[in-house]
Image 1: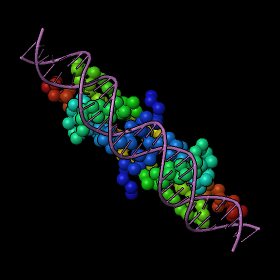
Image 2 (image 1 turned 45 degrees about the horizontal axis):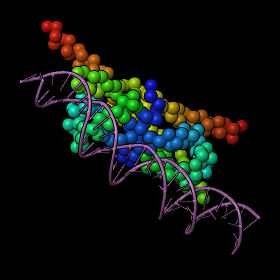
Image 3 (image 1 turned 135 degrees about the horizontal axis):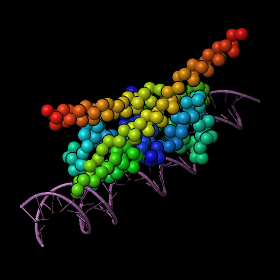
Image 4 (image 1 turned 135 degrees about the vertical axis):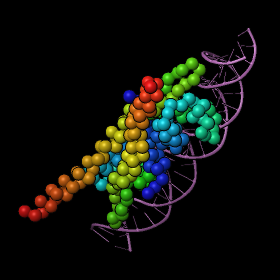
Length: 105
Length: 105
DNA sequence: TTGACATGATACCTTATGGTTTCATAAAAG
DNA sequence: CTTTTATGAAACCATAAGGTATCATGTCAA
């Protein structure tokens, strides 16, 4: 699994997030992805490389085509990182409770 | 709520993610956050501004101090975006099922 | 009020990053 | 075999982004 930094970095660009949304419906070649953007195929390929480096997509070669597939594991990695904050409010409430009990003997 | 781009942008830097982790335990002033990093207070302040722009923290002024607090709503925004991909596998399985049924009359 | 402390704000520097252009390569079609 | 077609790769460019240094401002304490 790639370093989490490369995953967050990959998600920081709007074009790359749009690509992920496209790939949710079906796998796409570089050319197919590029059709949806007003930029060169070379630029799109760079974005796909960054997404791959971040573990958000996987790539397989079929003849002269390169097919890009969404990788749920990459999404899950980010989800996992975020769940660290899930207990945020719980902790806050616990501390608040302690304070109250301490002040009301 | 801030544009999602500013939120993802804020998360893309390792220093800023570390700051969020620190703020999970308790609120901190700029100086307190800066103590944990090998960079100037000015740089840390910039990071805190980016985090605020992304809706990941809130800021309140208390005298001459500026207290930074984690904002769960910002985290939730990212979570929500990611849940768009939750149905990914469901959709894939549904399509696969259709294909099978079509091919086996 | 005076001095120390916490922060605000600006200018400036270096490196990443997103993008284009151009040329090379490899597979499918004629 | 020749010609498309789809991609790989490298050089180059402009701007954004992370940092520093410096100076201004506001507040707490003596």
